[in-house]
Image (cartoon, rainbow over all chains, first blue to last red):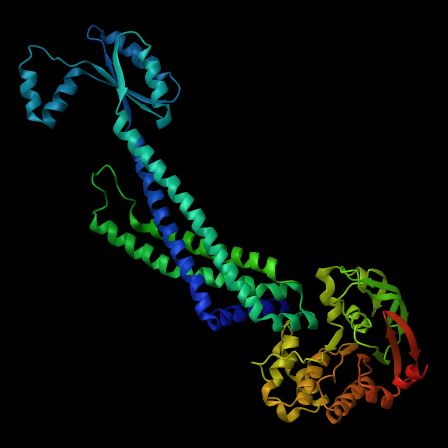
Length: 297
Length: 233
C-alpha cells in the first residue's frame, strides 16, 4: 500500500511538473516527437524494404540453358545433380517449346520472329531457385562447371542493385535515428535537470524527513516517461493515418507492382506500439542520466 | 546504552580543515542540550553528523542504536525518520499551505491520508498555529513560519529533535515563544532536543545542559550551564 501511494504521488508530481514548466517540457516533447517521427518513417521504410526484398528474393531464379545437343537423359542428370547442391531450393525443367509459347504470348512480335526460323532457335532450360539470395553467385558458378551447359545466369544487375540500394538506405536511417535518439535523450536530461533544480527545496525536505532514495528519484524518472509518451502521440497518429492514406493513394505499390507495400493492418499498430515504447524508454533514459548526474542524495 | 554516543570523533574536510578533533560525548533520552560556540567552531559539523549530513572521518557516532558512521547511503532515510530537524531558514515550500507543508513530511513516506490528518492537526496544535492552517508561508510572520517548521519536524513523532539556530532570524520576543514551544515538546513528548545557538539570552535563561565547542574541541560540558560559565572560565 505504502509503495503504491508513493508511486501514485510520483505520477501526480511528474504531471504537475510537466505542466508547470510547460515551455521547457514542450521543447523536450517536440524533440521526442521529431525523433519518433523519423523513427516511425524509418521503421515503415525498413519494414517495407524487408518485405519487398523477401518477395524479390523469392522471384530470384537462376536460368540454366542446356547445350543444343543435350538429350533428355542429360537434362534429367543435370537436374538431379543441381538439386543435390546445397542452398538449392528447387529445380524445374522448362523446354524450349514452353519458352517459345510463353514469349509469343507475351508479345506477338516474338512469334513473327520465331516463324522466320525453320526450327525453334531457343534452348531447353532448367529454372533453379535458391534458399538464400546471397548464394546465387556460388550456385551459379558451380552449375557452370557441369557438362552440357550452354550458360547459366540470373537477373543480377537490376535486382541486386535494388537490394543494395535498400541496404544502404537502411544503414543511413539507422545512423540518423541513433543520432536523434541521443539528441532527444540529452534534451530530456536537460529538462529534468532544471526540474531537479527548481524542486531542490522539496528534495532537501524529502531527504530530511526520511524519504527513501527511490521515493525521491521516482518522480523525475516518471516525468521523463511522461515526456516520452506525450512526444509519441503525434507520431503515432501520423503513422496510423498517414500510412493508411498513402497505401490507398498508391493502391498498395510503388512504381511497379513488384514493389508491394505491406497491408496497413496490423502493420501500423505494431509500428505505433514500437514508437510508444521507444518514447517511454528514451524519456526514462534521459531522466535517469539527469538523476544520476544532478540529484545528489 | 545512551541514546546518543559519540566516541573519539574526528572530522577533517577534504580541504584539510579540521572541524572536530577527538570529540566524545553522551546524551540521554529526553535531555535538552544546547550546543554553543563561535562561527566555524565545529558545532554545525557536530549537529550535521547527528542526522548524517556529514560522516565522521574517524570515531563512532551512535544515534538511537544506529551507527551513523557506518550507515550506507541507501539506508540513511531510516535514521532520518527518527529525527526531526529545524533550521534557521525555515525551508518551507512556498506554494503549499501550513497544513500541506506539515503533511508533506508524511506524504513523502507514503502514509495514508486517513492517518495524515490527525497527526498533522496534532502537530499544528502543539506549535499553536491552529488558526492558520490554511495560510501560505508568505502570509505568516517569521515566528509563525518557524512554528510550521517545528510542526513539520515533529509530525512523525521523532525521538530526537535537532535545531540548528532556530531563533537566528527572529527577534527576542518571538525567540522566547519559539523556545517555549521547543521546551514543551521536550517536556510533554519526551523528545530529546539538541539545539545549536548563538543566542546568549536563551541559553542563560533556560538553565539546560550546555556543550561548548571551540576550534573543533569540546571544551565545556555544563549541566545547568549558561554562556557566562565559559566566558568567565
